[in-house]
Structures are given as C-alpha cells and as structure tokens.
Image 1 (cartoon, rainbow, N blue to C red):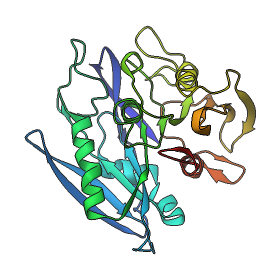
Image 2: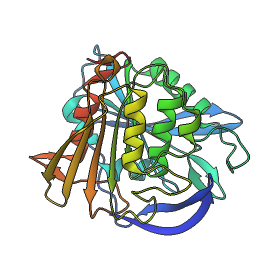
Image 3: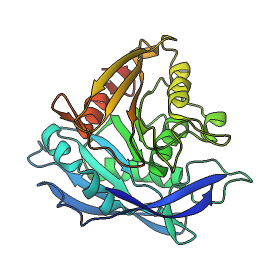
Image 4: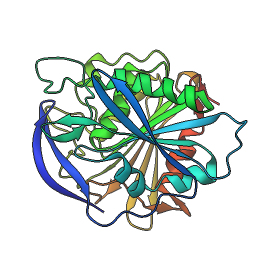
Length: 296
C-alpha cells in the first residue's frame, strides 16, 4: 500500500511524495549491496540485489527500478518485492537513489529548460551507474531494462528517450509521459509497457494539458516503434481488478507497445495476479522478450 503525503510543483505539474505506509518486508534470499557513485559533486547510491544461486559465469540481465517522488531506494526495493522475481529468473535488480529537490528525493526526467525546477544530472549519474555495474558485476549490456513507479516511471521513459543506446525495454507504473515526448530521440525501437489505474488521483490516467495520458503514451511509443496502428484489446480479470490489456504489435525489430488499464486502480505499484502470475512476473516476462536489438 502506498499513501500520499503532500504535493509539490515539479516539471510544470503537481506530483505527490509517496511513502510506504506499513513496515517493509524482508528483501529476498540473495545478496544486497550499496553501490556508491561520485557524480556532479555528489555521492549517489544504488541498492544492488544479486539473486540467490546465480551462476557467476553467466552475464546477468539488469532491471533498474526507480522509486517515486519522495521515496527511498531500499524502501522501494522491499515494497515492490521484485527480489523474489530476480531470485526465480536470475537478473540483477538495481534500485538507484534519487537526489534531493526541496528536501525530497526525486528524478529529473526532463532536459534542462525554464520549466524544469531540477538541475540534477540524473542521465549522467545513470550512465556512470551502468558502467559501474559493468565494472563490478558480470552483466549483459544488451539486456538492461528500466521500470519505475510514478516519478520513477517518468524516469524510465526518459531513459528510453535519452539513454536509449543502453536500454532494451522500459515499463512505467502509475507514471506518465510529460515534456519528454517533444524531445524524445530513441536510437533503436524500444518495447514499452505501461500499467496505470483509472482512479489515479496523483497522475491522471486521462492526462491533462501538461502530461500525456496512459493510453496516449502507449500510442506515442507505438508510433515511434512503427507498430500496427490498431492494437489488440484483451479483457482480463485479476484477483483485484478488471483489466484491459492493450497491445500494439509488429513494430520495427518486432517490438511492441503494451498497456494494462487497471479499472478502479489508484496511485500505486500494482501487485495484482492474472492467471497465476503476479504483476512483477508479468513485468519480467515482458522484459525477457527483448534485448537492445529488439525481439530476442
């Protein structure tokens, strides 16, 4: 469960700081380490989770998972509970820590400009983080994925636009596509997944004059990926919500743009289950289809 605590004007619209409302569960059975990165006169950090029982001779795919505005990397790792999925499917799970804006951790998903209140060089930090992961762990540079919650989902979209040479696929959970859309310049087709609740009162499902709504964002990536213009739509019933799975297929390099419309869902990292698969497993199975060159 995520609760909303306060609002702040950020990148031209209002975001809410999201903090865990109950004690976090224990991280999985693997190894959790803190990686420090010096960048832009700051010491930045990331929580790195190595899965239990991994083969040290096998290059691990990487999932970058970004917390929301006001969040903390360790809290985000425990609450999203992706470590258990990493254990089962052998990927390196990395939760970077955002820097402070007005005293709250955030991600600067936009390029410098008059409406951007942040001067954090997160793209530079994340470039260094990926290189540090490559230096200190055995990773598969062709299979680096990014996902995030709220402001963190916006950061995942930003990586698909501005650090696209490093990122194979992205997923945005209860986030949005903002100013990024006007300057987005991916260098290769990039599969995207968006999960968003229709009753989100922090980042509107429908969008507004300053942000692109969930379905429109999916269509944006479908257009960028040159998919079929008409998506398939599948009605699903999870253990918690009625879902609509919208999927644009047959893009360049056989990538897709997908969206789960969560009817009645609010502003949260979703943990619903569909046909015996929880949302984290759906995320991983989506990522696992792609590498930097498209469909695997």
